[in-house]
Length: 258
Image (cartoon, rainbow, N blue to C red; front, side, top):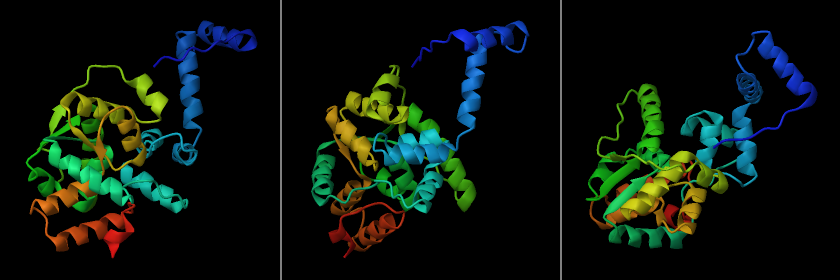
């Protein structure tokens, strides 16, 4: 996405002087450096928190803005008394999404659901669903950094070897900007639509935007319920996972915590 800036008067004269003095090669270079310095002067995690509180962006976009990992920003939000809308406490949504899982042979994961998979340690469960598992290349870029961080922290090697990585050769910057989502979310939606797949996302805004544009979406909790009904997960394991999900913390239906 290109942003045009009109500059005149004193500011333009100073820019000309910076170039003539040999400090910058061009006015464009000078402006880029000025913008970079401006951005660096702000606490980006606080900027992401304010933007998220305003209701205009997804949590995953907040992660991109902050330059932190999912878990780091999650705990920063919590330390500021802000619980992001991750997961689903809507029992109807969870059950409806489970039915959609039964109908779809292909699933696309975004960064939020990949993070959930790591936190709940359910990679094996996901691989046994008998579904085609895909991620966009943009999502995998972010996921690799996340797996590296968590592997180093916990002394356990994490990977997403069972996922097909799909490249997106389409500009979706304007779409992501208009909908307040990150580029990897937009790519995930595009891949899901292209494959006729169900998008697995634990970011409430992501699911809302996805459905608005004709792409079915489901929270990871629905996937776990589907796994229970398929005999992959026991009732006891289901309860354990739901409890663990609530402690991340994600929102879950109250009835499932009893």
